[in-house]
Image (cartoon, rainbow, N blue to C red; front, side, top):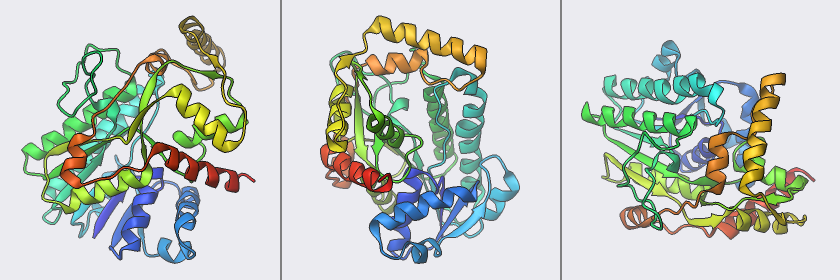
Length: 337
């Protein structure tokens, strides 16, 4: 029996589809039944019988920090895909980020170690936890983390979660870590890359000067399952297909959505002003932050990643990002027609 955490998220739902579609016995942890609609919608993109596949999953209500529910979820489990995480760049969400991403991962690792049946863990991290390379070089898995860098609260907790996984390997747990870039895929339009597509569809006049690594969600799932089925253990893998500038990404998305592409660069002074005004608005109204100091830094940074290790180890051929965007934007237009 395979356990999946974060099964109602973008990666988790696509992973569940792949697993049940290949007749694997799967149990998944959920927190809110309303998010089952995300899973069913994603299943419907790939099969004419989404309900049938959905009903093959054994769902367990639980939380990463609820020990009794995890005790039930881990009964008879032989392998674990840990996809659940909290994503936020808001500094005032640090406690929740730490509780979910670090403490929650520690609990998953502890249950894997204590279990007599779990053979391997796959943890879905992020390229945010990869150390920054020297200027002009692409990041590799060997880049060392620098705690003195201008790290966001999200980045800090993803790195902390990885430390928990490495701690588990020192205690006898076999594990692999996948570090994806920005994950492109359909089905969830309120957050992640789906929210970016939704924002572009509504009209986005500005682009920023930075760049980032991107990867198709089904490629991420393929990397996860191949790594778990292989003899590889106690390794991490950068999972990025291509690095694109934000301008190229937003312009291509706008063209695929048939809307006006952004045509103004958000200059550094404007971004610096914008995050300060956003902080003031949050302070006065309590509304969630949309732009933080660390996010502004990221939007202006040039990020490139070397995917040689994962291609050589697993024989992965990545989907071109333009193709991934085209498929995702087509589904967005259909879902929002």
